[in-house]
Image (cartoon, rainbow, N blue to C red; front, side):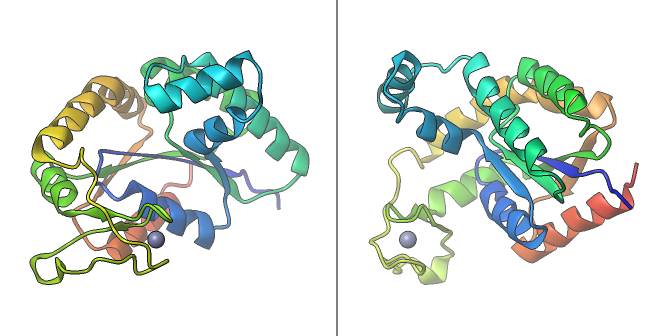
Length: 225
Ligand SMILES: [Zn+2]
């Protein structure tokens, strides 16, 4: 029987553990992956007007307007569609703004992938986000993030690749508060939109990685509409 492919959209504040869950889901469920960040990094290598402009925004800051990533998602959707059968796909880093959510809905409809769309919000409190982010260190080699408890603050090297871990300058209480405010402003409306359309599945993010994962799996399976 031909099952509808699963479309997973993962949302969550900084520190919610979105990246970790994304990697687990992607590997264990064998999902196609669409990452806005990856797509933009790839696109900036093309030496044309848009490529140069993306590079400048990535390096110097600024805004990449919605049509740019949206075109890249559409190209990826087309590529996946033409491959034939697949289990599903996971979308990372989007949608953020409400207009991106609307566009994505229409795109999924176009590609006939609108039957099993699951929007997962990994929910943590503001206090928890601040506690986690101000404690973490990042690996410049492989982007692995290490969360510190009081006992292991003396780990200096990445457990995955051995590079020296750094504390990112923006991972302070102030920096985190700024990011949380940005999330509320930018993504809050989108979350509300999915909630009002009964598409939002809230998962308690203040549990172990495996418990968050199994709650997500349960939510995907329970809800077979
Ligand atoms: Zn590393």
